[in-house]
Length: 355
Image (cartoon, rainbow, N blue to C red; front, side, top):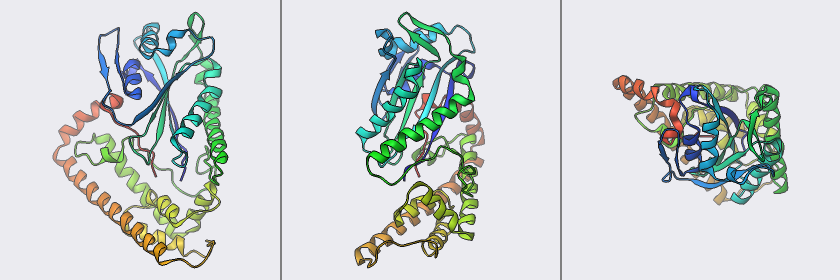
């Protein structure tokens, strides 16, 4: 099921960030920072399947050279606490094929960002098939035939960010509609959508990375917080299954048992709560079943799906308790890792947006 995810952050020297390093990581390439001589090599990073630099028609040719572009940005910004670039992260609908995902990203970037005078360095990461997402690294100065001008302060306004968030939802829904899919995404908060669920906590690392026994303390705390949120949402759904049904129908007119299971997977904690919530939703009188005569094969598929999710939930519970024990035994190691956590792009950590 398509999800909405759109974040905007600033790459700043004040945080010890390197814009050349950020560009190298996102593009999965090797770049040398001319001001320091440091080489950032991410050529072995998996899953970087598409990269492209988009710029206004009047931009000089050199902006399409990633090495020259970001070293120029680094040189133009003189302050030791300078803001260097803006980094957008968006989740791409898994319902769209790879080609359409690229078209969606280019459409949004061209019509909402590049047309305003920004240079956009785009990259799509597909290291996790259930979590295709894109990074867009944006310049903070308007580009012209002679190079970069003054910084555009209006691009920092909250209203501008809200326009981009709305624009991403509109462009995504347009491409989903073109594929005749009866699903959509919504940029509004859960409260604004009238959904009585608690917003999830962004973990900031992939599911695979969450299995590591050397997670920084801050990230381990996020995982614990998300488990608590999932448990609370599970209780809300068990008490009133219509909460889940309303959430599902908000994004798509019809849905399958598999869609219900995916929706509940991140909104319950543990196999037992998941099963109880699933039973409540699938047997709710408010749920209208389309079609009759379920086959033995379909029932078998349902059991197989439930067993698979059951096992996944149980593995998650066991792993969490193992991590808690490891944290207590290796607290000093975790604190050292936490101090380096802000450089996550230099350590190859991806955000996980999957359901």
